[in-house]
Image (cartoon, rainbow, N blue to C red; front, side, top):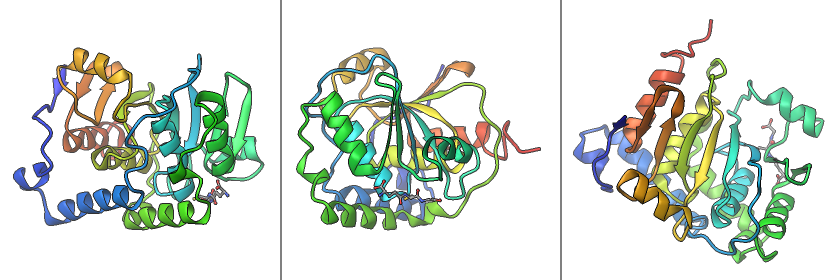
Length: 257
Ligand SMILES: N[C@@H](CCC(=O)N[C@@H](CS)C(=O)NCC(=O)O)C(=O)O
């Protein structure tokens, strides 16, 4: 079943008469992408593909996690994402088990039995393992990379406040997304808020996955959410956020006991 599905329109928030707060929310998401000069918007250097899905423990409002997400978009890598809210509950002990303390981003690569911490080390690892070894300029400018990533994160700091308890969902959602998309960011922030793990299919411009996606869904528009357990597939950022809130948030099925 498909829900949502009007064509991509940058003014959809206005046209659907959502609040000014939502329009500002979208504007700061655009600004966050611009602050990083669109890094994570285009695929490059696609190398060896991992046979098993990578696993990433991260936080949408973490400047170091952002660098890793950009790298994964550039390398067209899919992953199981374990989003950790600002007050992490669900994955805190898992990360502590791997690292010895809570620190994100954390990459677990079952293909090489590697566990990598520290964003720069993870970025280098990903380009070495799944690219041509060359880290793009936007991700290897040291303090400047960190400063712009922190600025982009600051623009979205309003998303760093809430961390409500939820129950673990039964099945992994799947999200077609890429780091530089201001629309996709809003959905990922919602998944972070509820700490809902999901499979991310990164589909930045130039992704070899895009042709198959358009053939399957009838158009090229992201984000796109798949909830296999409920037979749901949907376009449209606002519809996806409402769906996640309704089915997985504390107002929905995952309401904490
Ligand atoms: N040098 C590390 C720094 C990572 C870092 O400081 N991560 C923060 C989140 S942005 C963290 O894990 N803080 C612990 C916490 O949130 O409890 C890197 O580049 O990955």
